Image 1: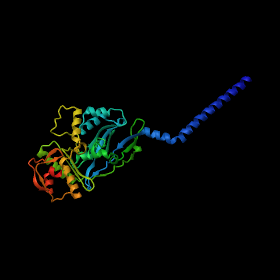
Image 2: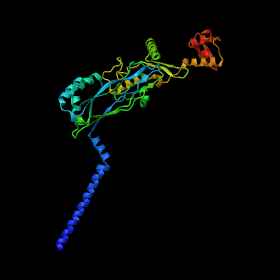
Image 3: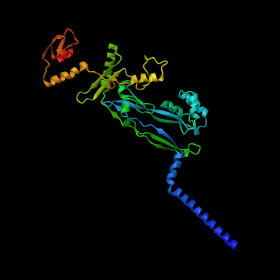
Image 4: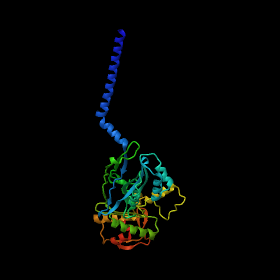
Length: 367
């Protein structure tokens, strides 16, 4: 009788212990499935989603007349998703041929275990469409944008250029990167446990936001004319470089900024043909590129010399201390205290009025 009572108590104790355990487990399940449902749904979604970025259209750059001087062209990015590939040999053969890449390079990326592997970016749209037409499983052809400069080398050191990811490198492109770059979008696809896309789930797109356009005071007509003049001077004087800066005297706006020789904005990493490129190190090549991209108008100091006589003349005329018809005599020098300062014309300009003295850049008259 005593044993029966003991066994009954033990069974009841075990029963209530199991009941408590099951209650805890059920409570935990309710908590996870009801109260934490959104959190774990999002986690599961992230686990089964593949994300590909969509480049935003970079803001255009326009001159003072509204002419587009930096624009975008549609290009493609070719990528592969390892878990979705069914015919790797064909993919390697097609991509290496169409993209002009070595089979070893493509195969290495096709065989790499990763969520998505980029093969090549900035591929011409026509080429991207041709690859898409093969319908190769595991190959993704996404359209994005590449910077395009319709005027080639004109104002190259002012505008600057962008890199492979469309980010500004030098010039206005990097100065106003924050406003020009825009915001990238994404393509989200749902996959199964093996990483294979589920066609029934479709795609979810977060559209990119284009960058802001940049309007500048540069006038490409004046820029073009100033560039022609600079090239003529460089050729005539056999100079290494010539700079011209044209400003609006009313408000200081820069209407033209030239520093020849310029470089091709659409191929900014191509060194000039007259530069010896065989056998040079990467470090030396980078030095040559930096020198080619350097804008002397803003990076180099300049002692104005005789060009400052324009300021002196304007101040004298405005202050009324000199008049265009005032007469002067230049013997070829002038004494200032104990110093003898010579005119550039040693024999002197002789008798001249102020207009003639300005034309002659006569030192004694301005002193």
